[in-house]
Amino acid sequence: MYHAIVYAKSLKRDINLVAVYTKQKSGKWSHKLYFSTDLDMKPEMIIEYYQARFQIEFIYRDAKQYTGLNDCQARSENKLHFHFNASLTAINLAKINHWLNIPKVQRPAFSMADVKTMYHNELLLARFFSVFAVRPNLKKNKSKIRELITYGAIAA
Image 1 (cartoon, helix red, strand yellow):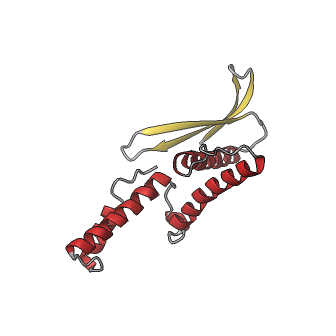
Image 2: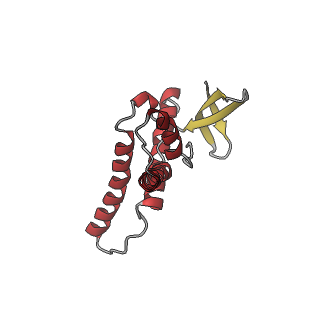
Image 3: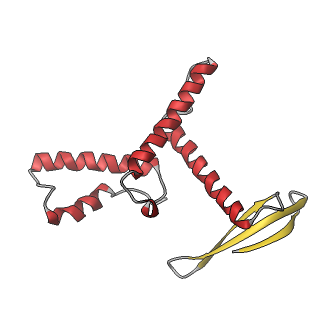
């Protein structure tokens, strides 16, 4: 991680710039640039704020795509607030339900698309088990079932 105060021509002012270099699995290096107009902010805080910001953006994206955040036809301010809160609460409850049994250090990025895909796969497998009389509780089936449930999930 590198940090510097630099002049941004497009903003016509000094900015607090943080460059983070990470090594990919393929062995190549990649970099990300983060900045703030607060020149006194510590580099670690800039990165922390960006991470929080992206989590908020993912919640809004998922709320728009999966819980109808944009689909309210109400005109009353109270009804609109209720709709927005219900939509965002549904996303957060899905996130809690998905992450509750996963240790904090092992939790991957949350994607409502992945959760939807995994629950669909689980429902489909349960149907296959009942129709074809497969016993899912056998030890040899556990790893294959986990693989089939996460089939199609996108790593965010």
